[in-house]
Length: 569
Image (tube, rainbow, N blue to C red; front, side, top):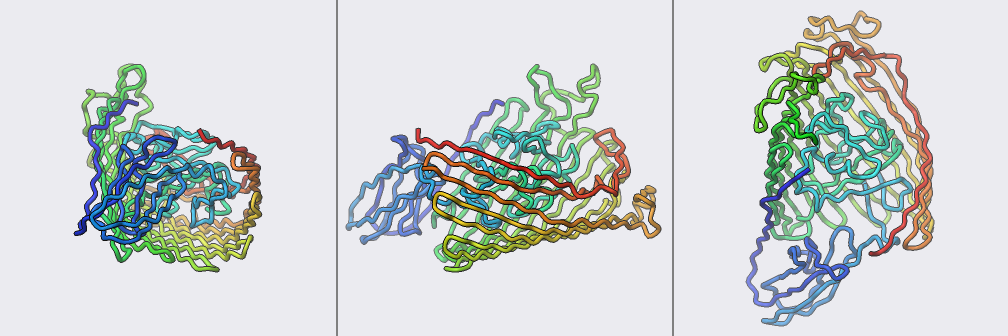
């Protein structure tokens, strides 16, 4: 993929009225390090420039604590004395944190995961990659990770696979929400781009004991950028990307500010538009065009013992669908290489996500609370621009709460997760593939950890209950003669799935360079709506799909042994 970044800038605004200052350069292994947070007494701060330099002006005389920190590096702290009308030169040399295995890095505080957890976890930093504007969205970057694959139906529709498992066998956590957006469809992409994302942690293998149904093949933990929390100044960035493969372009901007009372506000916005892309043979792939609009808003409070964050995301996609006949002679839907207007068939997908995350910390207890509501509207338009062939509106309310009791070398965590999901066919939909449905799901789990210096042991046990009711009584379903399995007289059918899952693992750190992890974990997945109740044509796939309401809960058991060698270059 060829990309050209044509605009990128950062800005910092501050206002004080003093004459002294501090400046310097931050390096690592002798090379300048940019985007390092430089804080003065943990409040006023700046970020280093591309050449590693920084400067803080208009400082009152006195003693201060000067801190340099960046993700992936050990924090450096200096005590400095600022004299009247003086300029101090303070340089930092940061050491990568991977060289200190004793340091515990939090991966997912909601579930209690850290870098000592015996799961096979890898992290993909988007700090230096997000400005490439990958047309494949977030999966356009993640599929470069070992064991992770992105199945494409054009550049705009990419589905994640971890170790060969995908669809509803992968869980994506975005803004703390367990994302549900009809992943059972082969032409239904992940629907998440890299706007405002710092990194993604990838759990490879079953993690159902912590994330519930669907975490059979693995989990994608999408983590927001929160660099604005390191400074009381307004920080931001803006950029544009051109993509020569699809004649595409992307504009994005971000801004955030933390106030002196520890409140913060941040926003991200992006728009991208792509024409049909060219393959390796320089052929235009017809109807692979797409466009995406994204807006994200965040507000909250960030204190030492209390943190909360209210977030809202809006994502609007129009995605061309490549037909089965595209590669046949004379059947391509390609018009000309700059064509961008939608043509049949295509999808319109709108996502609205409101989430609230809260963390409290005390000497002997830690609590985590998450609440979110996600609305996904999907229209597949195949026969006419004025008609919706397949139309679904799904609402998903998700909650997650955990309390942790650290007691010396042993910690105990108790958690509860649950969902309430409703699915409705749009009243103007001409085809009915799956019925209306209500889903209630609850999971309870216990997680224990024992930290014995070079050894870390962890075990977990979980119980889940899911009740799903299919409903075929709405006028649209009756008119389309949609029939549930067994054709019940009240046009309703309920299935219940329940069971337990467990995991047990250990991490052994021989020294700072060698880590062994062994984990035995169970996974499970309850059948999705399409597998149980589908009974109709699926626009965009040229298939008639029929479910089986007798499907049972899918179970797995996996042993995972890994060895990590960490060396400083």
